[in-house]
Amino acid sequence: MMSRKDYSTKNANSNKGGSVVHQRHILLNEKYYADPASAWITDSAEVIGLNLQDPFRTTVAINDKMKVPFKIGVHKAVGGDHDFPNPGDLLCASLASCFESTIRLICEKLGIELIETKIRANAQVDVRGTLMIDKSVPVGFQSLHIDALIIAKNTNEKLLNTLLKGAKHSCIVYQTIKKGTPITLNADIKINN
Image 1 (tube, rainbow, N blue to C red):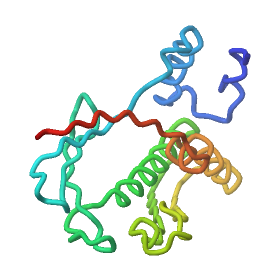
Image 2: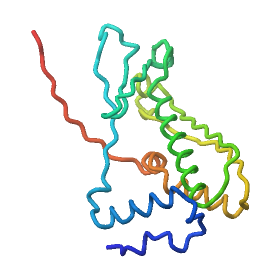
Image 3: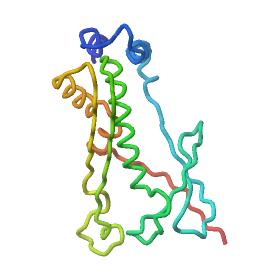
């Protein structure tokens, strides 16, 4: 079991006094230390099939509370029209946005002033696997890549390397994809005659 001091930022080179991120993290550290179960969160997305006669488009609602709707299309490489973002695009968006958000949090906490960021995520897949053309081709993205542009003031190369290392370590989506996560499925299948 880790002690409270193991997660302390007490000795970190940071902008503690003026950092809103640091202040919020102190409160969260105390809360999660006192009640570890409260650190468990659930993010969500839900597709409720509308216009089921259209095999190429649907809408996904992101976040149970906000239910932000996004139109989704099927990639032309698997027969769709690719007229809306596809699930692979959303995967890339999740990776890029999580990585960039993590960089912002760490920079604010360390007192690094960001001038510009540009994070681009790419995912490569051989679609012959999902189309069952070649059984030797795995179904799934075979590789992902991030291009990161970070322009900052009042810092140095060593601190920026620490920033990248910290972003890779703390980005939840990056770590989830890198390590792989088991997926469970509950299916309620009914026949309506």
